[in-house]
Image 1 (cartoon, rainbow, N blue to C red):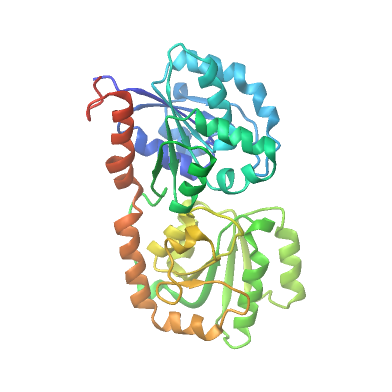
Image 2 (image 1 turned 30 degrees about the vertical axis):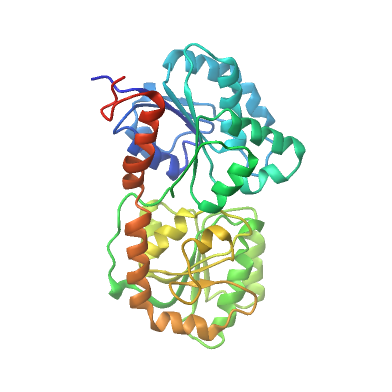
Length: 365
């Protein structure tokens, strides 16, 4: 029986897009259009004829007008694939383009799903009137919008999103947990090294802790334009033996650090539900996170993690670590119950798509 055609438009180098594609292929004939290139694992997973690459960078901070030049090629791809569903990931770039095409494309018409990632809803629309208008237009053309936190859903609805489905991107499966691998005093951070991530605050926190603890150490993963300045600050603070920069990690390398770390620290100014936070909780890390509504949907201060603030009491950190086993068990239970991606896709997202298209659960019209 032929599956319905599903075109996903996003960043083919993102591990989150890979996760979506892997799950969607269970129910649909998936075609990927990547604004950039395609990661090696995704390139192996999908046949070559089901991948198109635009090879254009999409910046979170905006300034993506050059993407408008891709509209003619995107129109040709739509005519070739004839998808029943089009799913744009990142509302204010990929989503805006697909909303334009939906408004003007009718051979045949498609169901448009806009998947919000965080900054595209929580930051970009508030940079100015044109950004807000573009966001409202993209949301207004959507038949369905996906959101990964209740907080972001509220913002989407205020911006004009009419039909929103809320579920976290989540984990593909629960990892194992070996307490013997956990290293006391080890902190792990893997957010992009940009101003919004405030890795400088994480370094300062570990520096304070290291005055009282000889075992305090921090591993900083990922890349970004702030890395040179952060490395300089570590040297000036005399923390070279405490803080290690490891750059961009593969999924296997990252899981290795989750397995070892006692603490996971993430302090951005704005965020929706962070997949990294969910991964860290599943691996038994104690989360220390910024005071954001989406973080508070997962972390209760002093119970299963800590909400960061200036002058965070080091005794609180020590108390959480002494209670590590109970915290780890609680967080793993939270993830198993609320944040396994395949289960959410199969129980919530796929049935909603079939309802929108008038399909049976087997995909028949």
